[in-house]
Every structure is written in C-alpha cells, then in structure tokens.
Image (cartoon, rainbow, N blue to C red; front, side, top):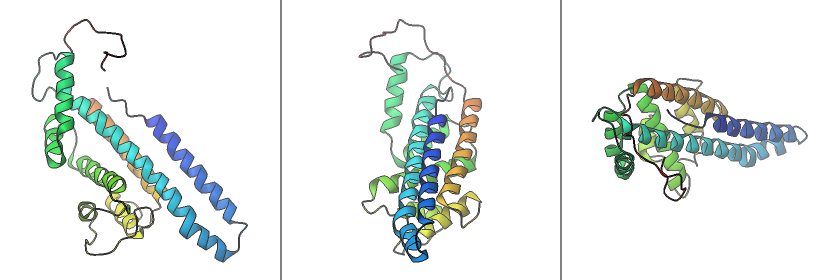
Length: 220
C-alpha cells in the first residue's frame, strides 16, 4: 500500500498558511506604501517559496512510492517476487531518467488516466526547475506544459505571476490563483492519484523467506 505522507504534507501546508497570515497581520500596522513593498519584495516571495518546497516534497514522496509499486506490479510478471529481486527492480527503475522512467511507469502502473500523468509531469518539471536552476527559473519543458512562451525573461518561480497564471490555468482553477490555492488544488488531486494507484495496481506477492531484523541488513 502507498505510504505518501499526507499528514505531514497537511502540516506543512498549515505551517506555511499560518506564516502567511502572520505576515499579513504584521503588514496591517504599516503604511500602505511600506506594506506593499514588504508584501511584494519580501513576504510573498518567501511564502511562495515555502509552498514550492511543499510541492517538491510531495512530488518526491509520490515518485518514491510509484517506484515501489511499479517494482511489484504484475504487468510484467505475476509470480511471487523475492526481496532481492524486488530491490534489484527498484534500483533498475530508479536508474532510468526522463522519458525512459515515465514510459516504464506508464507500462507498469496502468491505473492512472491521462490527466493524472499530465499533473505528475508538471509537478516533476516544477520540482526540477526549483531544484536545479540556480536562479529558480522555469525550464523550457515546464513552460511548454503550461502553455507559456519560451522566449521571455521570467522572474523566479516564487515571484513570477506568469507561472502562477500558467499553473492556475493548467489546474482549471482561477487563473489569478495564489500559490496557496494552487498547492491546495495539487494536493487534493494527488490524493486522488494515490487512491487510483492503490486501487488499480495489482501487486506480486513476496516469496516466503527468512528476513533479517538487523537495521544494517534489513530492507523494506
């Protein structure tokens, strides 16, 4: 069964929302100009970046569990699997990159529909842009998925109104949606993806074998 840590994700979202509200309250005692400057150049980019970290964690949690499920999928074999074979298959899948890993996951996890795969692809590209671009800029692949022009100089992911617009449009929510609303929508849909995977992916049983309880040698 999938073990995506939804409780932790909810706690992280709640923490960021509380921080966002506290900063909004602090700005209420400032002059309008100071409050605008503080919100635009300090508070909003920071809380948006925290929301992006939540999405980064969510993607890697789902990615990990998809690999674990795919390694036991009956799509390629229905016989019982040993723990050694299971570990070897996980390592094989984890070594694949880009289109190769997506192709394998699509083959081994047939429970997901096209909309779910599109969302996971956008979530992956968003996480990779956030992690790997030194200026936190969106990759050309992410811009294409969001229907945004590639030949523009975008602000960082946490400050770009265009990225928020693209994400809101992609998700089919308010195109002026805040990052808080975007994260809520993504988390809700990912919960549905988890349910589809749990219900629709037949798993190979494990071969009966002695296992070690020594933390140095025990594997999941």
